[in-house]
Structures are given as structure tokens and as C-alpha cells.
Amino acid sequence: MKQILSGNEAFARGAYEAGVKVISSYPGTPSSEITDNAKRYKEIYCEWASNEKVALEVVIGASQSGVRGMTCMKHVGLNVAADPLMTLSYTGVNGGVVILVADDPNMFSSQNEQDSRHYARFAKVPMLDPSDSQEAKDFIGIAMEISEKFCTPVIIRSCTRLSHGAGVVTLGERREIPSKGLEVDIPKWVMVPANGRERHKIVEKRLIDLANYNNTSDLCREEFNSEKIGVICSGIVYQYVKEALPDASVLKLGMVWPLPIERIRQFAQKVKKLYVVEELDNFIETELRASGVKIHKLDRSPIGELSADEVRKLFNKKLPKTVRVENLPGRPPSMCAGCSHRGIFYALNKLKLYVSGDIGCYTLGLLPPLSAIHSTVCMGASVSMAHGIDKGSDGEFAKKSVAVIGDSTFLHTGINGLINSYYNNGKSTIIILDNSTTGMTGHQPNPATGFSIRFEPAPKVDLVELCKGIGIKRVKRLDPFDVEECLKVIKEEVEADELSVIITNRPCIFADRTVIDSPFYIDPDKCTGCRSCTKIGCPAISWIKKDRKAFIDEAICTGCGLCIKVCRFGAINQRGK
Image (cartoon, rainbow, N blue to C red; front, top):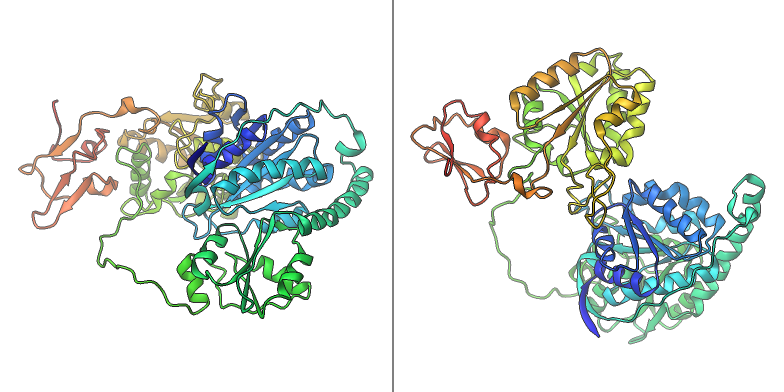
């Protein structure tokens, strides 16, 4: 049977067909939908872990118990999971282990543009690079077989275009893989130095064996058309090359580490000019040059993503005619109408505080008119950076700054920073924006929501009790839409001479649709044009320049009521009330 599947849907289907028993992940665009789709298969135990390190460790345990496991994450999530990955390379596996990492060239929803292929070389583990939805499905099964044959974790690399693009996929049946049973092998699994030294020898030999395997496997495919130009490529870039250079000979790499150097040398001898086309870093090209393979240089930037047209430009090919539409209005990103974070950012802006931000949809608080985020580095960094601002200024800036962090991000990597600040007598103010979901990645549940990955009831972490359990005395909950209370509480907490935590308590409109109410409208006879309502940054509120009055688009308005709390002239009313 054939179906049209996105890359992420195909990855999930591949896990099902390959007999995967356990999937533990942390959501991160563009990888989130893999686990969201895998949860539909009752044969697979799925969970959202508190972070990527935990997720990989869960999968390692599943492997040790004798079954196949997979974890999925975005490229920056692999940074978090790097600690167990590096040692898992030494221990190897029992049941197969696949680590699926989705890169984000052009940074559509990420804070950096790192190339995950370096992790395969760094950890000395194989990496597969599928190029379409069919390979996305098939490579899961191939990766599991490689994992168990060579006793190694296998990384599969996706990217935004593969994960979110779609193609026709031929489906197969699920293979039920019998459990190998719990493996008890002290020299293999206990990585004290004496054991680790011996395992390192195995890792180095394994790399040689994997390279030999890659030299003879079907993962490396030659498509010979002409001796004039030969192109080495992999992953989604293969699709661009085939479209842009239909007459070129192509060596398609399915495994990009370790490289099949002998196959590449054989291919190089058949063509007059050999090129490497790859996105982001010169990973393959650098390795081939180091191996003595002659590569013709392309004037390619390591920044951003490629496309068929970009490949045409690299080879000075004529571009196809396109229709260009000029002067389209800009659509800058913004927090949703009714967003539960808007009130707190409005208050922070009014108080003119420096705000250490974090990773999540609330990062959009940086945009005008709210303009209330001043730094964003990585998951959990806001809490630790606020502590550093406190200590770096001998407490002076602690009264002029706060940290904001979402509920899921706080549970991901914010807790350790809070413990550190408490232990080291910090005096910063931390605002946990609890909107009862993991918002920007697709509204997945997290440990503070009370729901499991399948939205079944689950134990709920109480954020107030968690903070108090650390030892923090000043912990307050407040409604972020009570603007006056927000201003009052934030003023009090930043002035306090001790560490304090403020926790907001309004759900995301996508997490709880019952918060949506009838829309508001503006009475033009009462509107004075003060523009106070436009300063909350709601996309439903616009400014009519010729009338010098505000206007609410009732088709967008969610009836949250924040606007009436900033209007001093009673010009805003609610339909039907």
C-alpha cells in the first residue's frame, strides 16, 4: 500500500515497521511530529521526556533491557544529549538504538544553524542521511540493523525540508523483534577508566568496519550519466542536485559517516570534474580533501539552506522563469491573540526592566511594541544568566532585571539554574510563564500539565511546591492578565533582597479552548486615539491612521479581555455582554 507521508510521518512509520518498542523524546521543531505520530501506534511505548539527555538515557535503558529504542530531537537538542551519546558510543547497545536529529538550515525556528554531522564524527558513530519520505521510513529499519550488527548507536539526520515535506511512501508490515533480554556485562556497561580504555579500542575498530560496510552497501548509490561532471551529495540536497543538474553523474551517500572513501575514489576516476554539494559546513568536502581526493571548489556559503535554484547558481546554470510578486505586506511573527504571556510582558515593558529570555513562544516578547526580551541563548539559560547578572553587579542589577522562562523549559533545564542561584545566595527574580503546554513546538503536554503524551491523566508536577521544596521562600502565583497586580508583584519581588519566583497561571488558548470568549470591539465615539490598547501588541488590534482610532478585528479576537484593562476611557466593549 502507498501513502503520501511527510518526512516526520515516515520516520514514525519506519519506527513502527522496524519493531521499535520504546520512543522517548523532547519536542523541538522540526522533529516534534515524529514522536507525535509514533504515539498513534499502540505497539510503541512513547513519552515526552523532560529533556533530550533524559530521553536518550531512557532509550539506553530500553536497549540494555533488550528492545529497540529511538529518541528524536532537533539539532540543539543533541547538544543536551551529547553527554550520554559520547559514552554510549563506548558501551554500544543491546537492542538497537537510533538517535534522530533534525537540523534547521536557515534557522526557521532555532537559535543557531549547527551542522549535526560533526556529532557523528565526534562521537565516532555512524550517521545516515535520507533524502525523501521513502528513505525516511526505510532508513529507520536499516539503522536498527546497523546498530545491532555493529553494536553502536546510529544517528539519522533530517532537516526542515525533509521533515515537513511530503512524498509517496510504500508501506510495509511491522516486524516484531523478540527481546534479547536484560544484558548484564560489567566490562561493557560500566564505564570506569579501566573498562573504558578497552571499549575505546572496540570503537576505533568499529569505525573501520563501518567504513568497509559503507564501501559495499546499497546506501552508497552511483547514478552515472556523463563523465564531464560528477557530484557527491546526500540527504535533501540530492533532490536539489537531481533537479538542477539532470545530466550530471551523481554519487549519492546514504551514510555520511564514516564515508565510503574507496567508492568515492572509484567514482572520482570516472569523471573529469568532481564536486561536493552540501548544506551548511564543508563536512564531506573537508574529509575528502584530507583523504587526497581532488575536489573542484564551489563558491558556496556555509550559511542558510540550498535549493534547486541555488545549485543552478553554483554551476552557472540558467534559472527557470519565475513570477515575482512585489510589495507584499510584511507579516512579522507575533504572539497569538489571547496569548497568556502578553500581560506579563506589557508589565515588564512598563517597568523598564532588563529581561533575560529563554527558548519558547514567549521569546516573541522581544518584538515591538512589547520589546521586553533582551537576551536568548539556550534552554534554561535565562535563570542562570539572571544569577550571573546579579553576581556580576554585586546585586545592583538584580533590582533592575528579571528572568522569564516557560513551564516546559523550566522543567527541561531551568531547575538546576534555580538550585544554583538558591545555593549561592542569589537575589534575582524568576518568572515562570506557566501556560499548561509546550507551546511553540506544537502544544505537547509536559510534566506540569497533568497529561501524558497521549493526553491521558498523568501525575502533575506542582511548580509552586517544587520551588518551595528547593527552599525558596518567596514564591507567588498571579494572573498575567491582571495588569495592576502584575506591576505590583513584580515591583515587590525585584526589590526583595532574596531570590524570588513568580509563576503565572493562565493556560495557552490552544491548551484550553474554554478560555476563548466572545470578541471585543471598539466604540469609535469613545476612542480618544491614545493608542494604549495597541501597546499590548495584540494582532487583533490595529491602528486606523486616517481615523486616528484603534480597531479590533473580531474574527481574530479571542475575548481574553486584556485590552479593556489598559483602556482608560471605556471605549472597548464585549459582544453580547
